[in-house]
Image 1 (cartoon, rainbow, N blue to C red):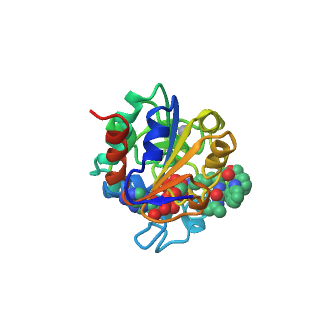
Image 2: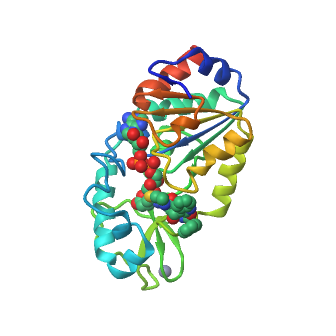
Length: 248
Ligand code: BJW
Ligand code: ZN
C-alpha cells in the first residue's frame, strides 16, 4: 500500500502499458457533478437508514415514501452533467485495447459522457420496472405524477434499481467479474468499497495478479489492499492520470 497526492511513476508504468484495464466507479465520481453520495457527512443516508428505503420490504410497506425519495433524487440528478472524471474515463477507453467500465452508479452520467456500454451493476434511476408484468421502461419525468406510478397493466411500477438483499443481474455481474479477473490494472474510483458483491471485484482482480489503483478523497477498507491510492477528487486525479500515461 502506498498513498500519493500526485500521479506516481508506478501508475504510469503499469497503466500506460496495460492491455486490459477494468475500472469500478462509485458515487464519489459523480459528487463533483452535484450528485449526492450515499455515505459520509453529506451522504444520502444521513437522514435515512438504508434499510428504511432501499429494500424490497420497505417498498412493500411504504411504496409512496420510497417513491418520494426516488423522486427527490431524480430531481437532484436531472440537471447534473458529467465532470472531468467521467470524461477522462471516456479518453482512457479510447487508448486501452481492452477496457471495461463497471459502475455502481444509477445516475447514467458515464453514458452521458460518452462511455460505451458501461456495466451498470445497480440499475438505472431513469428506468422503471413493473411489479406485475415485469416491463422495463424509461421515464425521465420529474417530478413524477402520480406517486406511486402505475403500469399500463394496472400494477405498480418500481425503480429499476438493485436494493439490499436483491440479486444483481447475473449477466452484468458475470461480465464485471470476468473483466476484473482478466485485468492487468483494476482502477477503483470514488467508492467506499463496503457494498457487496461490487466490493469483491477488487479481490477478484488482486487474486488474478492485477495492479490495484484506488482514487478517493479518503482512505477506505480497500486502501490497505491497493497497490497505490491517489488521495484527492476523481475530477482532479483522473485527467492527470490520462495525461501522464497517454500524453496528448
Ligand atoms: C470521492 C469524491 C470525489 C466522495 N472523488 N472520491 C457480503 C458481505 C456483507 C454483506 C453482504 C455480502 N453480500 C451481500 C451483502 C448484503 C449487501 C451489502 O453489501 N451490505 C453491506 C452494506 C454490508 N449487499 C446486497 O444486498 C446486494 N445484493 C446481494 O448481494 O444479493 C445476494 C445476497 C443478498 C442478501 C444476502 C447475501 C447475498 C445488493 C446491493 C445493492 C446496493 N444498492 C445500493 C442502493 C440502491 C438504492 C439506490 O441507489 O437508489 O447501491 S446501496 C448504495 O451503495 C448504492 C451504491 O451503488 C452502493 C455503493 O456506494 P458507493 O458508490 O461506494 O457510495 P458511497 O457513498 O458509499 O461512497 C462514496 C465514496 O466516494 C466515499 O468513499 C467517498 O470518500 C468518495 N468520494 N467524493 C473521489 N470527488
Ligand atoms: Zn405491468
